[in-house]
Length: 405
Ligand SMILES: Cc1cc2nc3c(=O)[nH]c(=O)nc-3n(C[C@H](O)[C@H](O)[C@H](O)COP(=O)(O)OP(=O)(O)OC[C@H]3O[C@@H](n4cnc5c(N)ncnc54)[C@H](O)[C@@H]3O)c2cc1C
Figure 1 (cartoon, helix red, strand yellow):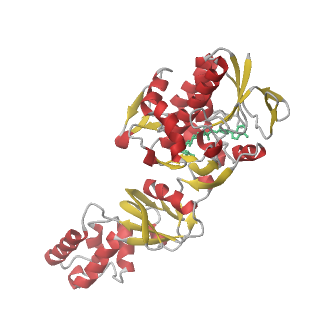
Figure 2 (figure 1 turned 135 degrees about the horizontal axis):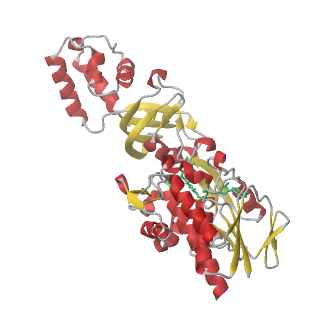
Figure 3 (figure 1 turned 30 degrees about the vertical axis):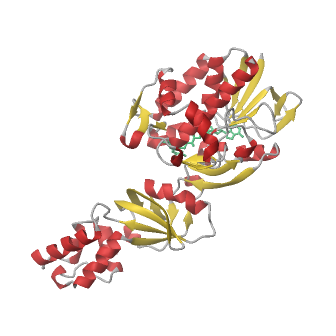
């Protein structure tokens, strides 16, 4: 019997353990988890519904060393994830934009399914057991000076969301082992912006958000933007945040098209028409016809227009200025919110030191690294969990194969 230690009972760790346990009965598998509750983070995913993969996955949904991810994602694509869960008795459903969720609508179903399968396979989960030291031995690894394993799978996540167990411990272990870690930075997080009207707090508006640096648009995405007490949030903002995080020295602005469904010229004619037909209407009411009230008032004010002004008195130039602001409202960004608020880590283990098919270290045979610990991260939509399942399963399969050979 060979022993396998898995550090971290998260998505990748459970996928690796199950794949290995199903492939071969020749291993004793122990998963070491620092929290009292295994797979705790999974409960928070997808707003408690667990967006576990995405049917429309493509390479452009990933960042970091995306070429490395291709092999595992090709061998274990989203349909294979759906089949993997079906084989454990969990059905999935597909929602907008290809997002896949458990049919129960509850992340707890995914967690229970994985735990039940690990139990069925006789995989031991040692909870409350943080691994802080790994010493390579002649034919294996010694963990915390007391647990020996022939094979080691490190899938202890990244630095994002430390409240769910991931405090960067994986990177400390990697450095102990002489591996290179690409600077970790928070991704899929909100953006802090102190210089916009506080009256906007609580406003939600479907916008197109564009990230601009040195006058150049770097990325844009549509969706609901949330104005909060600290700045901007919502899926499009979280998608932009990675670019801000990895270049902390740069100055960024977010340009919001607050009415993306209507071209500028059409909006201008619409407002001029409304002004003509109801000149007694206030500017505030005019704005409320197209935007949430607080946002309309703030944009009017930034154009020097008081909300109580009758719109019949507004000049064409004033209306054009207002239209320009609606179509391009600029928010100066201070910084991204930190790891406590991020969903994923940009950066991590330098993948040039690992094999993309097996996830095995090129420095230490029998050491495998998968999931968020590697320098690969995905956008919102199920891509990060998909990477965890694919890379975890690739490592589990590789260990079973290597021993069989
Ligand atoms: C709020 C939130 C919502 C999210 N929603 C989604 C979503 O809907 N879809 C999606 O695709 N992605 C989502 N993500 C991202 C996704 O959850 C992660 O990318 C994914 O869980 C990473 O899997 P992993 O196995 O690599 O690491 P994790 O799932 O983070 O697991 C790592 C485990 O290792 C343990 N650990 C850490 N250090 C040690 C140590 N030294 N010793 C022992 N154990 C250790 C941790 O406690 C943890 O249980 C979300 C993340 C957050 C925070």
